[in-house]
Image (cartoon, rainbow, N blue to C red; front, top):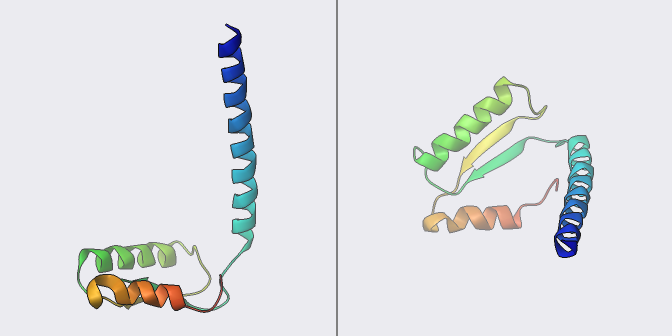
Length: 95
């Protein structure tokens, strides 16, 4: 009985701590907005599934005014996606 109580108490404490940290992160993220157009790098060629998904996301963002800056899809599909991953890794700009 005592072990179960301690286990339950620990679980509740962990969930409360997680909820508090998640709320703080969400508030910090809500304040940030990009200051220039956002490049949406797609690590696949044009017309494929990844490209269609990225353009659908771009459409949803612009249709619902979720971001003040424009979102520019850029396909970098060479090297089985490696070119896209390198472009993201080496990108400079807003965090």
